[in-house]
Image (cartoon, rainbow, N blue to C red; front, side, top):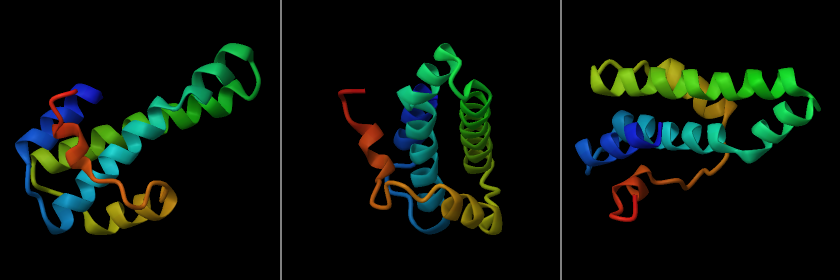
Length: 102
């Protein structure tokens, strides 16, 4: 997912509007999927089904956003729903993945 996010950030260096929103949400979903608590919860058996479900959801949402951006077929209603559901990191800027450090 990180490699795909880097690809998107480089392919769309100056996105605006709906595309920028989708790219920012993709960055959010990547961070949410990478959250270390999911692996810990799955490994420890503490709420492992919940953790597995949440991890899988974030990966699936990221993949759908990726496909939507690449095909330039972004559903604004769906994106708004996802933005409202996972609204953490309000000021995230997908361009961080353009960094040479990645």
